[in-house]
Image (spheres, helix red, strand yellow):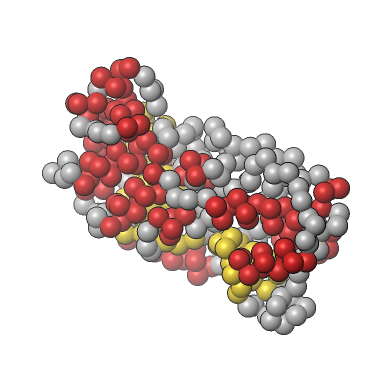
Length: 314
């Protein structure tokens, strides 16, 4: 029977005093020592033999300024997330979405990978992580140097035409939207993980979406999976293949509330593949995990990457 370890983040003087014993160095990383050798060893041992697959969620991007929905930095929505049915069937809903997403994209485009993303890339480059499956649409894993990355829900930096299928860069669509809406100005306080923002209807009343620049009439949509859509089956199949070939599955920053990500945890557990979860707050996958660490990803992951780089698992 596999031992289950659950640790909870407790920063403070005790953590700082534990620093030499945990072998951690440098700046804010000292706080990683709170969880001690036991959970650090458990996480490190899962990585030791390689063939690890990472499943990441919105919690990994919060330190890049992109809030999640359910974690400590989550933002309360005042509107329902866009569904594919509303987007394709309601011109007003589509205009509202593009106005909000147009502003949200400016914030997403400026976001940079944080210490957690960079640590995952380091673990990949060390040959211990085979692949990253991310539920995020912000592209920050790739920007940090990770490869391969399976973007389960698509990418915000690409736009697809629902008629002709042409893919266009978000930068190009952003340029055209600016030209079509030269006087559009609105105050943005926060961006949602799916790249839109909360705006009152009166601020989007005059916004003009644009059509496909290739076929001229096609409806444009960010190349992401909306609510009510399904992830392309071949993408799901690839993720299942990666999980089934892995020696361990490590979940980072996901509450696993929706089945889209949780199914991979269930599959791993069913196949006897160890699961580790690092997240702030409980998740719906905790019952399947052998190691659960409740802590900021920007604290845990750099410490883990440092220990792996130093050969501390030997």
